[in-house]
Image 1 (tube, rainbow, N blue to C red):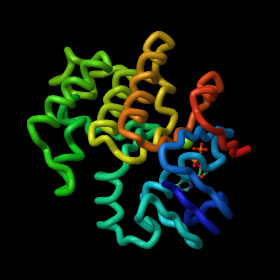
Image 2 (tube, helix red, strand yellow; image 1 turned 135 degrees about the vertical axis):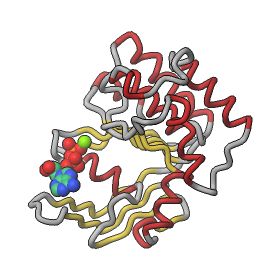
Image 3 (tube, rainbow, N blue to C red; image 1 turned 90 degrees about the horizontal axis):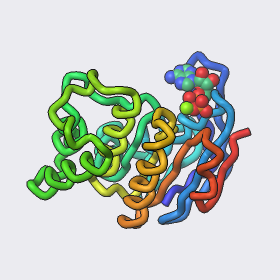
Length: 214
Ligand code: ADP
Ligand code: MG
């Protein structure tokens, strides 16, 4: 599902650089990424999603060579094929909970917003414990609630690849197990691949494999 080779990346004006000679994640594999803060975990996810483009080397994802696509094609690819739970959520503050979750369907032609999709969105939010907050503006949510909205938005299109950047970092222990079960069940049910950054070593047994950025 993910195939990176001979990758070199640096941020302009920064001395951080990332070199990945060879990295492979198989279809339906669940891989955890661990490592200290600043080691490039978020950068890796952004390269896989085509938010960032490498200076050298290639990033392939499914049948797309992401690193060779133009900006508009990378954006369409990302919205329609990847469920990305961002470390800082990236919710739209002026939209309600439900409209945030439906937003990907409104900004790309490749996703069709049907009645069935709306119903699924409502059900997913219900399962995440947000059923009574569908019309609430997301700026009036706790961090944990925002994180759950971000997870729902990522899962709704049943993407072939889920990228999760510390997706349970803001959840209280009681919610965490339940939300993780929903995330892993969704990935399992849709035969998706999961690449997840986590600081929570207790979660590692749930994954097929761990990649350490140390
Ligand atoms: P992690 O997710 O492992 O904490 P990141 O991938 O976010 O690490 O960051 C890796 C390094 O790149 C850090 O040193 C960070 O300061 C730097 N960095 C991240 N984003 C940018 C950016 N947009 N511009 C310049 N440097 C950045
Ligand atoms: Mg990070």
